Amino acid sequence: MIQRIQSVYLLLVAILLVVALCLPVGQFIGPDGIAAHVFKPLGVTLADGNFQSTWGLFGILLLSAIIALCTIFLFRNRMLQVRMTVFGSLLLIGYYIAFFAFMFILKNDLNAMAFQLGWALCLPAVCIILNYLAFRAIYRDELMVKAADRLR
Image 1 (cartoon, rainbow, N blue to C red):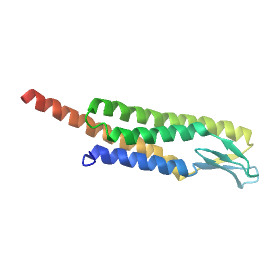
Image 2: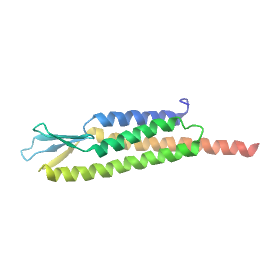
Image 3: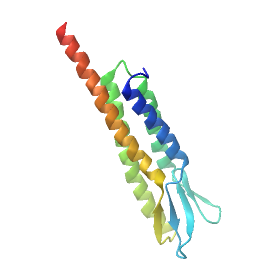
Image 4: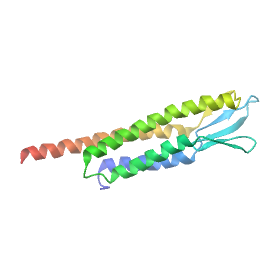
């Protein structure tokens, strides 16, 4: 049911996560001060053309996008919809933990002096906020249905 506000929130979450899959989340700055390596969720493109995979980040974002999209169609089972929304938010928090782990490991491996964050790194945080708003709307619907059942 797309006319409910939580469906709009969850659709926005899915769209933003797909956008986050495609955009670089940062760059490693080499010792000479030039951006040498581009860090995307699928992996790091090295300056010499090689590729070092970080497929775990890509998998977490893809799974979160699929969960958000599937959660829209669970409107008949609101408590499952609530659980799936919370699970999606926990996955996105796990994404940030995995991202920082990959960043520190790759920074040492690539002998980079610094890491410059990209704006696409804030998209999962926006998705966490939208998941929270969807959670509140779904739970409000559940409370309204329970109140209507008490009146019968």
